[in-house]
Length: 242
Figure 1 (tube, rainbow, N blue to C red):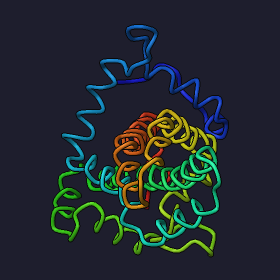
Figure 2: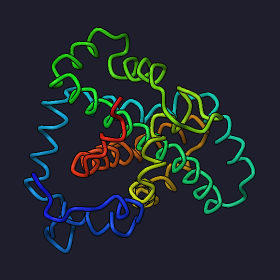
Figure 3: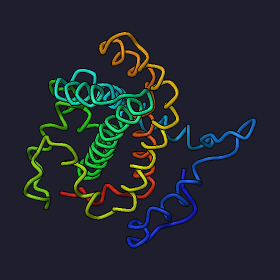
C-alpha cells in the first residue's frame, strides 16, 4: 500500500508531521473506535508473515524478555519497595515498562531497517532469510552478529549489543520519527494501565511479574510492528545502507 503524502528529510525531524502522516494508516471503526485500514492490515501481514517470516515472533520474545532479566527485575523490585501507595507503584512499574518498551521498539525497527537494506543489496530477501535460518536463535542471533559487523557513526559510549545501538542511525537522522515511536509505546502501555495496576494487587512479587506480563501482552510487540511498517512506508532503510 502507498500512503499518499510524502515527507521530506526535514519533516522526519518533526514528530507532529509523523503523527499526521501515520493517521493515514487508520480509519474509524464501530462505536467510535479507531482501527487499521484493511489494506494496511493486509500489507502488514504480507510484510511480516510472508516476506520476513518469523519476525513477529522475534518481537514477541523480545517484548516479554524483561520478565527474564535479573537486572530489570532487581531494579523493578527496588523501585516498588520504595512505593507507599498503589498509585505510586503503578507509576513506578509503568516507568520501567516504558523504558523497556521504547528500547524494544527502537531496536526492532532498527533491525527491520537493516534487514531491508541487506535485502536490497542482495537483490531480494531470500538469501538473508537463508542466513537467518542458519543462525543460532534465528533473528535474535542474526541481528546480534550484524551489530558486531556494523560500522555505524554512533556515540562511542554506545556499544554493539547495548540498548538503542542498532537504532542509532534512526535516532540521529529521523528524530521526529523516533519521538513518534516513543509516544506510540507510551500510549500502548497507558491503555493497559488498569490491568497493570490490578497486577500490583498480587500477593507476591513473582505473581506481580507474571500478571504484568499477561496484562501487557501485545502492547509492545504490536506497537513495534506498526512502527516498523511505517518505517517501511517512509523508506528509512536507506539509513542502513552499507
